[in-house]
Amino acid sequence: MAILSKDQAQALLKKALGYSKADECEVNLTGYKGGNIRYARSTVSTSGEEENMSLAVESRFGKRSGVATINEFDDASLEKVVRRAEEVARIAPESPEYVPMLGPQNYLPSNAWFKSTHDINPEYRAEAAGKSMQLADSKKLTAAGFWEDRSGFSAKMNSKGLFAYNQSSNVDFSVTMRTADGTGSGYVTRDVSDVSKLDTAAASNIAAQKALTSVNAKAIEPGKYTVILEPTAAVDLLQNMFRSMDARSAEEGRSFLSKPGGKIKLGEKMFDERVTITSDPTNPEVPSSTWSNDGRPHEKVTWIDKGVVKNIPYSQFWAQKKGVKGLPAPGGFIMAGGNQSLEDLIKGTQKGILVTRLWYIRAVDPQTLLYTGLTRDGTFYIENGKIKHPVKNFRFNESPVIMLNNLEAMGKPQRIGGNLVPPMKIRDFTFTSLSDAV
Image (cartoon, rainbow, N blue to C red):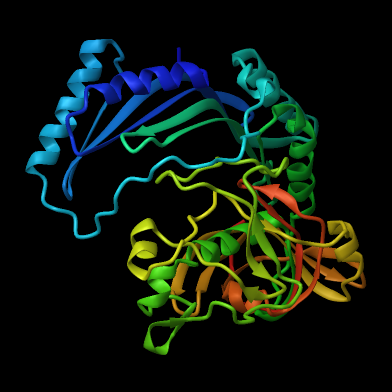
């Protein structure tokens, strides 16, 4: 029941919409099945499985809007939730940012759903976690990991004639490996749409090797270093930058893209010319929804081209206010890279630091995108093209804008958090102090 076909979802939404007496009405239907398994100290601690389907109705009278949700789908329940949304709308204040609902839209066909992931069951999860724990046991390490999978659909219909339907599937896996004395730590994370591409033993082996080679870390002076950021380390800073690319905050002077007088840096070169960032909901490696939450189509978009800001996401309200088409923010981004492996980048480094992961990242200044945070789970000193020894973790102060102007080299992009991100070699990355955390 949790996964309806396109025809089944369309029929149910039509029925719900048929009860509406509002000026405008939109109905959103979502359903999913999935599960998880968590382990710590190489023992399973929790596991679960769930499925659910819910319907959200938004009714509007003029600029007044009300929303109600339900997870019962008989005729009486469908009419009840529509009436409830209308009751809320009648007493709600008018929205100063009202935007009319969209009419029919054209969407790209979605390729984000895989039967292999949909068919995952508790035995599959247990086997995947077991491979990771067996790997840890074989190396006398302790493992703490989490696996979560989901397969589902979402559909939208409104009284203006819009209908959208998507299916998607996803698996997230991460594991931290620690040495018995707690002085060595390694981490790896993987996410896939098609579970057949995920090998938990191979991924866990990366975390294990980092844990084993990160013991007896030496302290070196903080300062500016050439760093190699693995995709797991780079993605958080890049995501923060991408989320800050919003037209309204830029034009209101609250963003790194702001200029005096309400102008923005659209069309300006802000990064190294090798920086090109796009999005494509049909990319086979990082497929995502072909429509946004407000119903606008997602298409292939170039956001940054050879260092030049080409496009900025607009909310529907801000696009209407400014009289532009306005693109919705994408589901994920794709950063172009090179053909080198991580090992190739290390070989080409005379002196530098390899960073596995950044965490506890906090914003310092939104207008320069300055962030602070810590390295974690494997930080290593590189000399003459080889990893020489582990080093203690650092606190960093850095902006992704500066970082993307200090590029020296990039490797082959890897999926991380629904994005494609290359490993990056960056000069003058700023470490401000040491951290005793492992």
